[in-house]
Amino acid sequence: MFCMAKPPGSVSPAKRQITEVKETKITINCVTFPLPGEGPEQQLLKPNEWSYCDYFWADRKDPQGAAHVTGFEVLLQKQLKGKQLQKEMAEFIHERIKIEEEYAKNLSKLSLSPLAAQEEGTLGEAWTQLKKSLHDEAEVHLKFSNKLHTEVEKPLLTFRGDNFKKDLKKYDHHIADLRKQLASRFAGVEKARKALADRQKDLEVKTQQLEVKLSNKTEEDIKKARRKSTQAGDDLMRCLDLYNQTQSKWFEEMVTTSMELEKLEVERVEWVQQHLRQYTTLRHETDMFNQSTVEPVDQLLQSMDPAKDRELWVKENKTGEVRPVDLDI
Image 1 (cartoon, rainbow, N blue to C red):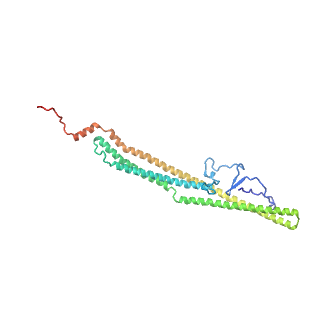
Image 2: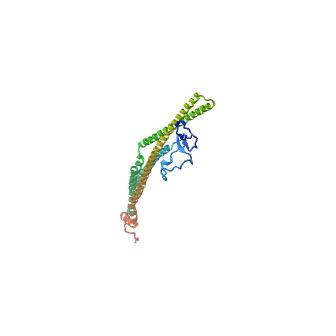
Image 3: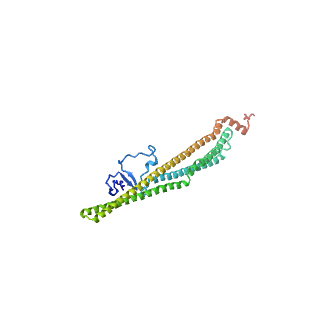
């Protein structure tokens, strides 16, 4: 679907004519674009930034079968997908929390096990401390799971609440309304162009009739046809002006709103980044605290003394120091 070039007018409106010119523009889904290679090359609004406001002007086919999806709808879908993915991240962290809680529970339970509780001496002390370290480690993992909930999962889940989707709908409705207005204006241009073509054809027919037969009535008809043709040309120009004004308004709102969506996406990514970094910080802290729970075990293992253990055990369990001697008769 091609747009009409603006019909040039002569000094006298009554003698205005629409001249044939080379098409330099094309209208697709009621939005007018320059044809490739025609006119001055457009410069990006925000060069080298890959900004939303530079790359989402055209519509594209909907993979699900609808006629087309506007560039702005693609941007909105990105926002909704981002919110969904963030929700999935929160669910992932929640599963991690459940693992930590279950792990802490099992560690705490194991720390109370009576296995090898009768071990004695320095080895017994080290063994007792090792079991206690499991309880301490369980506390570390439980604190880790609690912090994951408050400092990672919850912020990811609650970032931009239910009002966010309502705000997106406002953007959607606003831009969609402008596109509807643009479509209506373009339909008006097409209607006016057809009306002008009909009036010009009528004028041409009456002019040919005048050449065949000269009469006052024919001349009057030609004057009337010329007035109607001129009026149709004026109507077309008015419709073109209204269309271009509406498209200009849509363009301005697209730039403003797409940059707002771009800002929202940057904020979302930075928010996720901040809290995933908090996850790694908590993870490092957990490793450090876990290390501290085994340090007393390491110290007792290093101070273990088999000779001392033997002394203690012998003192407590000896049955006699007097050795047997030979029997005399």
